[in-house]
Image 1: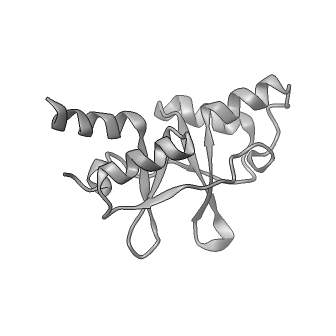
Image 2: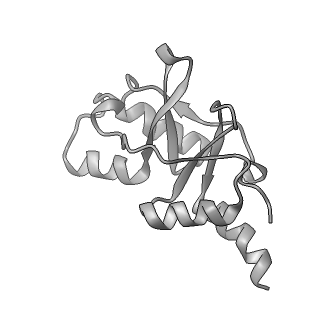
Length: 129
C-alpha cells in the first residue's frame, strides 16, 4: 500500500490569513483546486488552517464582502497526516472528520502538500479490482 506522501502531485497551494475571499476564489479557480492551505508567515509558513469550497460557499451565503480576510471564515480545525502514513489511515481521518482534503506534513512537521478524497479513492480503487 502506498504512503500518503506518494499521492502528492504538486507543491502545496497556500494562502495567508490576511488574504481576501476574492483572493481565495481566484486562486482556487487558477489552480483548479477545492481547498487551500492557510499558512502563517510569522511562523515560517506553518499550516494553521484549511479554506475549502465549503467555507467559500458559506461566506458567500452569509453575504460577506469579497474583501473579507480569510481568517474570518477559514476552518481552523486543521487535520493533518504524516507523509509516511498509509492511505488507509488517510481515508479513516477523512471519514471520521467529514473532510475532503487532508494536509500532508513531512515527519519533521514541515508542509508537504494536500491530498483530496479523490486522490485517496483513486489509490484505494487499485486494491479492490
